[in-house]
Length: 59
Image 1 (cartoon, rainbow, N blue to C red):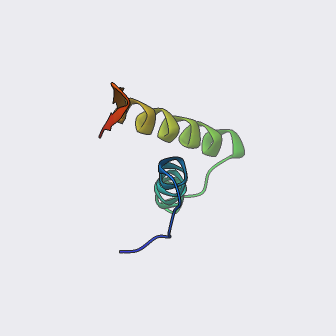
Image 2 (cartoon, rainbow, N blue to C red; image 1 turned 45 degrees about the vertical axis):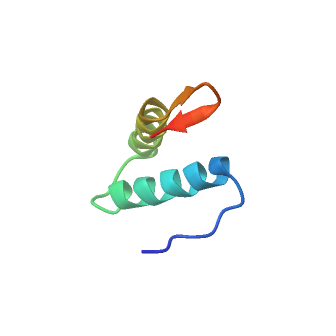
Image 3 (tube, one colour; image 1 turned 120 degrees about the horizontal axis):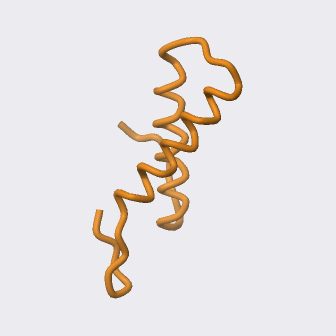
């Protein structure tokens, strides 16, 4: 399932975040504030899933 092509790790994370947010928001009708909370929660989940150790990312 190709969602896009990226030139850097940061671009990959950005694409992943957009895809996950889109999937979560498709399941219902949300107020703007609720959608923003979903976007922020998704960004936090992705940040917590990535740990940088000695210059290398552990996903």
